[in-house]
Image (cartoon, rainbow, N blue to C red; front, side, top):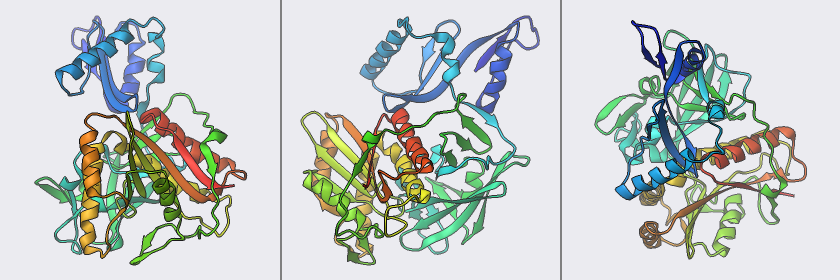
Length: 432
């Protein structure tokens, strides 16, 4: 936010960014000051967007595109400017304003820890992690960043891969001179390479921290807490739940392929059969560290291509119950997969890289339906048909009729986040 200060010969204009925007809001309300320009990022129609405007009426965006796309943007922005139903005085009231915090907000429940946005904006094959065990490097495509727990003033997270399991642990500690710091606490030293630049991963994350997302939809970006001004009342409708018959399925087994064996009694195979029988062109088993989803399913229809991201989780017990952990982990996966909705080209490359890697993992293919040739055809078709995404979580350990308030809160948070950002509903397959 830019603030113009009238009557000040030595300071006529000031720009505030990040957590300082909260200061600017207070300054702008004082006598002799006026908001000169405001810019920010958000979500619209399931896409990430940026917008800025000045006191004199200029409107801009950081988006890039062709001339026809620019014309469409102008038309959409003009329609808003002419819409008398928009109350401009209330716009700032809906903005998420970050604020600096001196310690980790330990009173909040963590939903997920995600790679920083700076990494997410880079093609996966250009981001490589190297350790003594992986001297040739391992692309981020095959690595999981996993939340562990909160201790004292720090959040602990780990890196894992299919070949070595969990191979390094880190802590994000809030406070100190720099505001926050990320340190590696176990495992061999991990080096990050992006393009031609290399350095310690902990050093990079101390500049570009992982994002900590909380159940109440607030976020922690380093030492900046981003939260809605008004507390959210999160609810989830009964229409989001679908109870399946789990006869013949061992609900404590999650993965279809494990230890070189295909398991027809696993939760993931039950879910895969649902989409295979639904005549999906592609049913791709992406299960493993660095996955986009346990199952990535594609189906071409007359006027669209359906993209279904399926997240499966085994039950924490032999019967459905009230275990909060059963829903936290699968909801975390669903939230992290949101980025793929508007990155279909990158998702396709991700699937191709995962399929190619099987040459060293002794498995015939990840395709449970379709093949690479059909995927290439859909990639070409996507230039002319829109991709419509849907997200499904499959958790037989959850009982539709016997859910707890804590389980409902976690599920509602995931549903709200996906709906408000990528414009996508999340359905829940569970037990009765």
